[in-house]
Amino acid sequence: MFGCVVAGVVLVVLFATGGGSGSGGASQPQKNAAHKTRPKPPPQLPRGGRTILPGHRVVAYYGIVGTTNILGRTNNPNADAEGVERQARAYAKFGEPVLPAFELVTTIASPYPGPQGTYSSPVDPSTVARYLAAARRHKLLLILDFQPGRGEFLPEVKRYARFLRDPAVGVGLDPEWKLGPTELPDQELGSASAASINAVSNYLSRFVAKHRLPQKLFIIHEFRLSELPDRNKILIRPGLATVLQMDGLGTVKTKLESFRQVTRHAKHFQIGFKVFLRHVDDPVTMTPKQVMKLHPQPAYISYQ
Figure (spheres, helix red, strand yellow):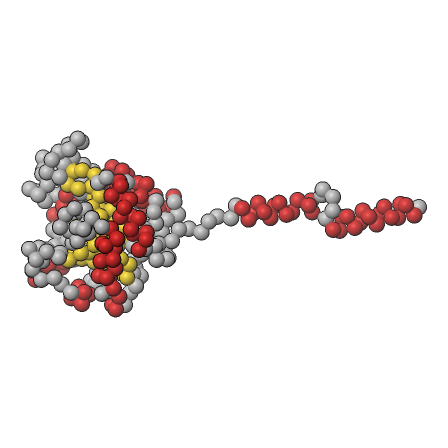
């Protein structure tokens, strides 16, 4: 009788303390499993957060490596990063936090047909990798810009898809260099349909959602209305900060008139403005103060 009582006490103690191989002993592995499957936080922009526009102003250096453009002239990405950071600081006093950026022409319109007959040539991925590495070191944005010649935008964007996985990397499209089947770069002014632009934005928006990326810049260049003949059909997609970039050059009076024409009926876009640094293009280099007096006020300013 005494032995039965002792055995009963032992069983009660084991049950109460989770001893043995019952359900109480399995709770710790279940907690560990739950901890291991906790999803990672979504990636952030280089300087934090997940939204670029609205809420910031982006200041960029634009160019083709190895040309007289401000980006790529020295072929030194770190020097370019330091330069655009200095330029960006000039806009810091105008109310919104400033994000410096590179806008690197990644597919370049060419006077030669090339192997695909598109009158354009892709930049070596190693060049893009060098500028992305510098952008990461300096916490910059990087926009890959596309001049497809007689080709299409979307295949060129997809060619560099591995770089789009980076939270800092966006896309720019330049209809001036999107040519018809008989047109040549520098001889005719190109144009792009809303359908060709929407195909890219659809791809990018899905890409952002699939990889849980922060908002990407999506730049559309224009300086004449003929470049975007059905602009009213361009869609604004989730996950993209869609910017209409006014590329006009010339005297201040000429640039302001181009800006008025391009930005008229463009309220659904974020607005961009380009400053050319060669006197042959812009005889007077507009100051940040002059740029900020524009209406609508640009959210994206690039220097070429």
